[in-house]
Each structure stands twice: as C-alpha cells, then as structure tokens.
Length: 247
Length: 307
Image 1 (cartoon, rainbow over the protein chains, first blue to last red):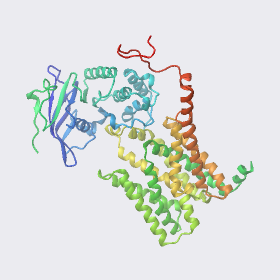
Image 2 (cartoon, one colour):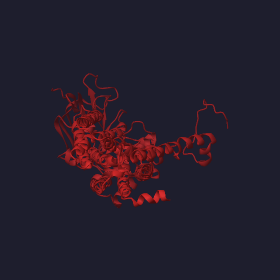
Image 3 (cartoon, each protein chain N blue to C red):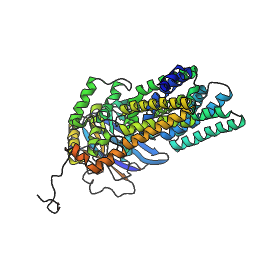
Image 4 (cartoon, helix red, strand yellow):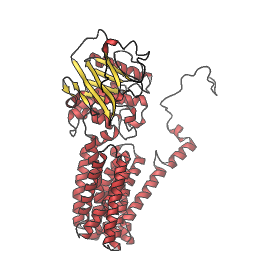
C-alpha cells in the first residue's frame, strides 16, 4: 500500500491529458499493493516513478501497460480505456523478465516492435525494415544488428529494447528500470532520446531507483516508511499529494 | 549396395520410410522450440499421457493413431485448464496429469491381456508395421503442424523471449502457449508409431539439442534438427530392417550417437575443439583483432612489462 504524488514540472506547457490514472487499486490475490492511486499526465512529460524497493513502481508501470488486472478504478489513454490503446503504448520490461539466452538476432528483436501495427500474422515490409535500420542507427547498434541478443553486453541489450520501443512509434513509452546496470554512454543516449520524445509530445514513464535527472516525479512510498527521503524532498510538495487511506 | 537398394523394393519398408521422414521433419521443427524453451518435461509428459488412448484404441480394435490423438488433445486441454489457476505451477499440473493418464493405461492393460509383441510395439515403436492409413494420417497431421509452426513462429519467438513485452503489445501469450501445447501433443501423437510411446521424447529433443550445439540461429537450428532426425531415422530404419530388431530403438540410438559426436566435436561448442584451442593458442593465431583493449591504468596499478 502506498501513497502517490504527481507533480508536473513548474512552467511546463500543459497539453491535453494523455494518461489518466483514475483511482486505481491493484492487488495480488488478497494483498493490496496500491490503493486509490490518481494521476493525470499531460503530453510531453518525462515522468520518473521513484520509491524504494517494494513500493510498487513496477506494479504501477505494469498496470499502465495493461499487464495486471485492476481491482478498482480505470486507466485511460486519450480518454479511451487502455485495453483499446495498446498500439500507442511501448513497454520496455525489467531485465529479469527476458530470456536472454533465446536464439534471436538484434534486428529481429527490434522488428518485433512492428508486428502489432502490421498485423500479427502479416509479413513486415520495406517501411518496417527502414524503421528498424533507423532505430538501430539512432541507438548506435546498427553494426551489431545481425548478432544474437545473447552475445551483447547489458548496455547493448538495453539499446536493442529501446530501439524496439522507437519503431513502435508509440505515444506513451513505459520503461522499467531503464538505467539499471548500463554504461555511461548508453545512459546518455537514453536521456537524449527522452528529450526527443518529450519534444514530440510523448509521455515517457520510467520506474527508477536512481535519482530522477529532470522532468516530473511520481513518488511512491510504503505507509510504514518515513516520507519523504532527503533525495525526493525538493520534488514533493504538499499541494500535489493525493492521500489514499480508505480501505 | 544391395543392403541399401533391396529394402526399397519392399512396400513395408517404403511405408516405414515415408512415416519416419514426415515424423523426423516435424519433430525437428517442434523440438527446436521445446529445447530453446527448456520444456522437455512437457513433451515427455504428453508422450506418457497418450498411452491410455493407445491402449483403449487397441482394445476397441480402432486405429491406434486416432486413440493417441484423442488422448493427446484431452491432456493438452487439461494441462492448459489446470495451469490457469495461479497456485498450480506448470510442472506440477503436468506431473499430476501425465502420471494419472499413464496409470489409467496400466490399469486398463492389466484388466485385459495384450499380447507381448503388441505391447512392445506400443512402447518402443513399430515403423515397419505402419499401414497406408497410418502414413496418410501422419502426413495430414504433420502438414497441419508444420503449417502452424511456420505461421506462428515469429510470435512464438516473441512470446518465449519476452513474454511481458509481447503481452504489453497485445499479443495473447496464453493462447500461444496453448497452441504450442497442442502442436507438441500432435507431434507426439504422430511420432509414436515410428519410435514408440517411451522413445517419442528422444526424437523431439535429441536432434534439436544436437542442432543447438551446432548453431545459434533459430531457423538454422530447425533445419539442422530436421535433417539430423531424418538421417538418424533412415539409418535406424535400415538397421532395424536388416537386423530384424527394433527400428524405433535403433533410430533413437543413432540420434544419441549424433548428439555425443556434436557434444565432443562441434566447431564452437564442442569439448574437443575447445581443449585443442586452449592448448595451442589457436585462438590468438586465428583472431588477431580483439574487440577491446586496455588503454588506461592508474599509476598505482603495476604492470609486468612497464613501457
């Protein structure tokens, strides 16, 4: 159980409400992880989901990705239920959720991002190939496109997954711990890309252990923990807090 | 040459040849997925589960393949149903179902006597006893399996490699898992005539495991697994025919020999090349270009060859 606070950066241009988290409760069986979470995220935001272990960062991200059933409430994207809007959401899972030994090439991993828009059983075409090459170049991994994903370093594997998110051309990009265990260069490339996505009016939502570099913050905490940690203090203002104690 | 040519004039051998060629081809393709996903236990369980179907078909004087088909599909459905409950892990459900099914087969078997040779054929295969109906059924089911695999391949890859990402894109990973379950069941069903109920799993797993030692590419692995399975099947069939011994057993043994040969001598993954390479420094001689080098060390770090 945790409390959330959504705080747009002061002075940021307010676009249409893009992601609306409307009073959601998420439970694993009878254990309630998050209760009565609310957040309106406008377009063109890079949002960091911060909080210590076990506060439900991944859980919230998975819920927005449509991977978890909601016990109550609703998540909407451009005023449509999230289930209808999957095409507009890209999700980069946590490292542990992927079978890295699976025999698949970097190019094929990135191409997967085009399957939903092309139709699951339809062949991909030239446009898809161009999009893949472009994304590979953007992430600086075009030269290793034909390698097996298992042969890559952790940072290169992360870049391949980000490239897959690029070719999805989604409006909302969800990333679970994208900065965990990567080299400085990959880190910087991902930050540059966040800036680009922000400028294009997209919403970037990352669960992160590290201190948020910039942009907005959604902070999660267990009720038992003291709030806020020194790290978050300057982000968290009384005004933005939603309290969810009803249960 | 007569040893090779003569059997080809025997209709019994020709039917057996058709049967094992079809079976080895699809077992290689499907087995590749079973090996890369590490779900060999599932294949083994499905093989055991079709046993009561075969026994019942035998007692009813029906086609054994049809009995196996019904039992295989029922088992696949039961496993899918049981694993839908979070508390029942896949392997647990599989363990419960396949032992129960096998036990049912054993109980029916002790109630009604089955002739020893017939039982041997059920357990260890009898490709040389395949009828044209068997071959036709095998071809029909085999084509369906192969077509589904080709159609679903890239989605199966996606769902196996990154299930969370695939689901987030809207892919029904559960439906794909069930499809793979049914495809595996069908493969096991058509394979049992060739290598028998107990040895089916060897035809699914061994050629694919051998191929895994030889390549890192999924497509190449499927082609190699099918090719290796076909070679082993043809050799095993000749051995069984000439020696009047179990062709199913011979097929599996030849396949196993191939696996150990690859395990020892595979160019990149084999034990022998690795040992040879280590001893002679062959790696350094063949690949002078390293991908990375050490460029900086703090003054505190000593080096054995100061510049």
